Length: 122
Image 1 (tube, rainbow, N blue to C red):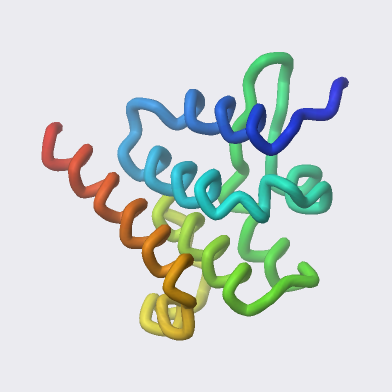
Image 2 (image 1 turned 180 degrees about the vertical axis):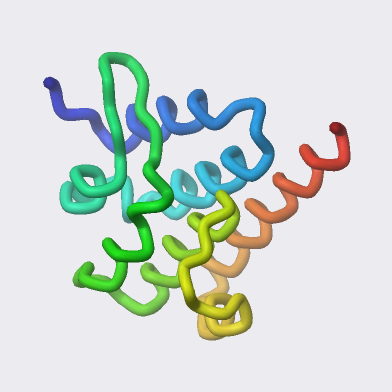
């Protein structure tokens, strides 16, 4: 299997998520944040890939992020993406959004707004 660039992986994940507002928002957050798509350990543990498709196993995120070597902000963003996809990561929302830097805060807000726009259309 060939290795994908983070841009290629982002494109596949966005395509996979189309049609489900929660998945679209979660994928958008993950793709815009970018850091996790660049990490081989995350891709190996949480991304399923078959040919020209890729999907995130959101249910794998809570246990993965507990052992991942990452900043607290990176962990919060990954947990928030999983939460948007409907997975309870065991961390209260208030804790997840507190302490985000401006860039990550804007990224999270855009993802939530995306989900709300799509949900309102249905």
